[in-house]
Length: 622
Image 1 (spheres, rainbow, N blue to C red):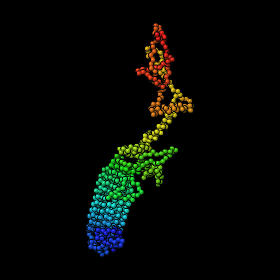
Image 2 (cartoon, one colour):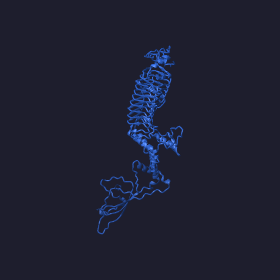
Image 3 (cartoon, one colour):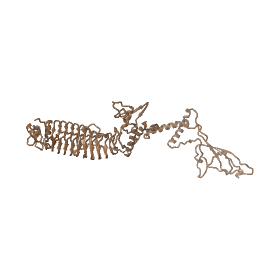
Image 4 (cartoon, rainbow, N blue to C red):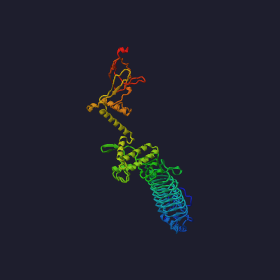
């Protein structure tokens, strides 16, 4: 009969009675296939008569042992037909051992029932393999199995443990709608292309991985009913509408994660793993299928997620879409979290060159701004000098509005504040104010005008350079206005007037300050070094020392310390018929307060010019 060539044997013979067919000097042991009971050859090397006789002895549910046997497509079909149950018309096999077997043609085990364990350890499938709707009632062992082409386990039921330790999947692997009742083990498994667990059910899986996948790991609509730890190094990880009834820990490398619509009833942690995963005996797993990719983890979408149960650690959120998530203010973000940045370089708004302020931004703001300016053009690759377009670019109707983005920034700001990330919270406050300033539907025009002024003057109170520039501009304008109109031509002098009273009576004085005279000459005469120095002094004292040194009012009340100590005049001599002389006293006082020492308790009422103080007659002095 037609036989397939077995794989080159090793230097040691197997532990079971082997076929030895096609032995050569280079391969002294020949075929390693286990001998069929009562024969000296394996099933593949039996002659047609012996093979037919052996298959005729098989019945549904029989035990089979074909370790290291090479199978062609025809030989496998004849074997399964011999084990087909007439009631169900599907093959039914008892304990099955296909360890080390090689399947050179398409291997179709569809709808087969393994009532006991099924071992394919070390087997090689050089063509497509199909295990659709297969039932594994016991252990399903595929350790170190090699699948060269695609393999399907769609609708398969693993009642016992499913072991795929160090298995190699060169083609795509499909486990759609599969049910794993027992443990699931993929330690050291390598997937070159995508592996799909869509709508799979994991009832007792505590570990998923560690595994390495050069494509995408798809767990959309999958259900985990026990606490699970997932260790996956893959190009992408799709978890759309995945449900975790208990808690879960996702330790990832290289992956772009999509969590849209995921259901979390207990805390779920998504964290980046800094070092390669280790397999058996703590040996690091090979990551050659992911060579050249960034080892970091990037979360792309959490739309529809209840973020109250989600914790992110050391992940990249620069392209993450938050719209549609609930309880974002309770999202946990720890470690190094990366957000998108505005475009780099300068751009023009009209004739004015502008540069975007460096801050943390959301991907949705990029999408909205790119759609607003309609750059880049559809089909054009965006550059670092432009806002990154969204999936609906340049259509604005499905793009998030500024009002929605302001709410996102507000909730995420609280998240960062709770995590003690004050710089990040400040950036999100800036983003919230920006979106409110651009919101023409939910923000009144007066508030938008105030926000625009606040943005221009100080960057919403977060840009020190802009605030200092505004202060410097205000100081320059103040100095200029003070020089041109604020300083009088001459400093006003205070005048004190009064009447002479009788000796022993209180001297009453009236103090007045004339109105300052504003400059009226040409502007060129007002701009002088003296006026500039005085205006600069007034401005610096007002801004820094909070005291201008100038009187803002035209009428200034006279303080008692502005006068020298009171002098008591002796009484005038009185006599019959002598009238008290009356004199008008006028004193001139500078606006500067005299720096004279006075004795404690001295009350100052007025100051008289010494030349005008009347002298008593000498007769009165005697």
